[in-house]
Amino acid sequence: MIIVKVQGGLGNQMFQYAFGRALSEKHSQDLYLDCSEYLRPSCKREYGLDHFNIRAKKASCGDVKSMVTPHFALRKKLKKIFAVPYSLSPTHILERNFNFQPSILEFNCGYFDGFWQTQKYFSGISDIVRKDLTFKDAVKYSGGETFAKITSLNSVSLHIRRGDYVKVKRTRKRFSVIRAGYFKRAVEYMRSKLDTPHFFIFTDDPKWVSENFPAGEDYTLVSSSGMYEDLFLMAQCRHNIIFNSSFSWWGAWLNGNPGKIVVAPDMWFTPHYKLDYSDVVPEEWIKLNTGYFESKEF
Image (cartoon, rainbow, N blue to C red):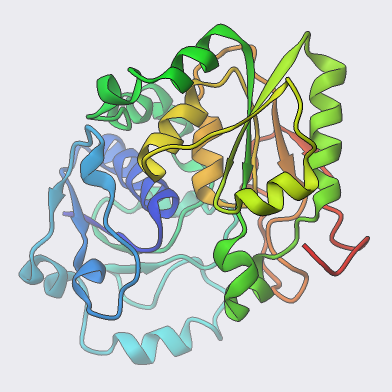
C-alpha cells in the first residue's frame, strides 16, 4: 500500500499527489492519501485536491497506523542526525531535503511524509499528471471575460503573493526573498522576447501592485472568485512569471503551450534556511535575480 501524507497549501498538495501518482504507476499500486491534517482544528489550510480529477483513495486511520509506528516522534529527532533520505522505519519514509532523491522511488510500499517539490519525481508520467490535475469546474472558469482575454492575447501571467509572506513572521523569515526589482526585470525580459505581450497580474495585494506597476494598456489586474479559478487562468496564459511558491509553480507547469517562456526566481528560500532547492525550478525555465541582496523591503 502506498500512502502519501497531504499537507500544506494547494500547491504543496499537488506536488504530493503527483509524487504519489508516480509511485503508484511505477509499482502498480493503488494510491491512498492521508488527509487527516485538514481535520485538525488548528489547521488553517483547506484540502483542495477534490477540485481536480485525481485518481486516489482516502486513507483510513487504520491504514495510516499500519504504516506508522508508535516511536515516530523519536525517529523524527534521530533522522536529523543521520543523513539519510528516509526514516529508520521500513514503512514510514520521511523526505530528507528538497532536492530529488531517486532512491525513494524504489519503495513499493509505505507512508510517505514530505513535500516532494520537484518535477523529477513525476517527469515520466507528465501526461498522466496533467490529465489528473484538470479542474472539475473548468467549464465554469472558462466562461468569463478574463478567460476570453487571456486566450486572445499574447498573455503572460504575473503572480505576486504578499499576504503571509509579508505579515507572518515565520513565513517571512523563510520565504521573503523577492523584491519589486525581480518583477520589473521579469517583465522587461518578456518584452524583449515576445511580440506585444499582455501581462495578467494575479495578486492578494492590489494596492501594492497599483503603487509599483503604473497602469497601462498591457497590464490587467485579475479579479477572480478564488484560488482555484486563479490557478486555472494562470495555466491558460501563454507564458508565465512565477513567484517562489508552489501554487505559482503549478500555474506555469500546467500551462500546455509548447513554446512557453517561464521566468522564475533564482532563490526559493532565504539564506537562513540551508535547504537544497536546486531541483525545484525546471532546467528549461529562466531564473532571474530576486533582488534579495539589493533591498531589505518587499
